[in-house]
Amino acid sequence: MTRAFNFGAGPATLPLPVLEKARYELVEWGGARMSVMEMSHRGVHFRDIAQSAEQRLRRLLGIPDNYKVLFLQGGAQLQFAAVPLNLLRGKTRADYVDTGAWSSRAVSEAKRYCTANVVASSRDCGYTRIPPESSWRQDENAAYLHITPNETIGGVEFHRLPDVNGVPLVADMSSNILSRPVPVDRFALIYAGAQKNMGIAGLTVVIVREDLIGNALEITPAVLDYKLQADAGSMTNTAPTFAWYIAGLVFEWMEEGGGLQQMERTNAIKADLLYGCIDGSDFYHNPVDADCRSRMNVPFQLSAPELDDVFLRRAREAGFEGLKGHRSVGGMRASLYNAMPLEGVNALVEFMRDFERRHA
Image (cartoon, rainbow, N blue to C red):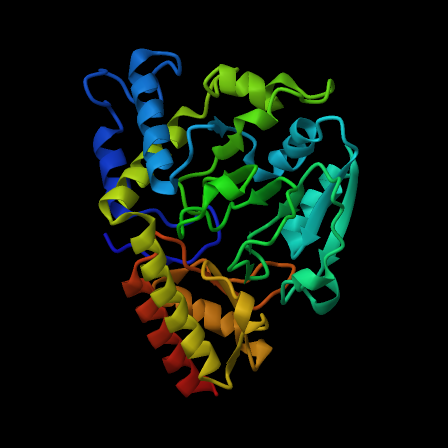
């Protein structure tokens, strides 16, 4: 079997050792005499799987003991609502930094429950940069400040944390969680869909400081109440068991591969290779300001857009998948998540240079 190099933005490529172990354990996990997909989410076997996954994630990120880790459903978009429902805590205003499509959607959803104050936006420049902090109009009485550290569609990433002036910091890390070490204790809450760097679709991880939960709005559905979920071990209803299990395998693979320090080193090499190819050419172009380019999602355009379809067709024939840009921006996009091997990026760069020689 020849596997493609999958540069899709999510669901995304998985580490081959994870796939192989899941295949081996698919029919029967351990001595359970059944598959993970069949076992009770409240049974002793799945409890071991769930606890192991949480412990590995805590070690990888260095999550302090006063933070709860929740394994939930609904994708990151459901957290757009869950965050204000849980964290307003009697306040009526929350601050948001608008740096792309996903932060913009978070703002729209938050407006259903509070006054969502956009402290800064890069919409006017097509979301190609992060507004300088000196321009942010923060509310010192805001319930929290929300950022999207990596914008999957536009390819913009925060490479340093903002100064929040004591306001709780909330982050949608769906597309760059576990790609580098982060100081979790600087955040009030981190949430992330699993299908990019942690596993498969169907699971969302929430990491929340425990003193901030327990004061959800009365209208909050029980499955979105962080306190209820924390008290129930993320199992107020049937948990996304198989996705949770796969996440545990991914965490194990990361630990065995050197942890987040090694993930960061490899990700920097991969990103430098691809950006070097783009910047060293008049044929390819990346629109994002150099100081906030994403290491995870690299959008690029051809100097001759009429060649886009040819590029994508030839790329597919050469063994590359998932390179078509998001429909809202067009062009191409290569996602370089942890599971994308350096070999894949080297092969893509070689293909791009050959395509340029043939068509420039």
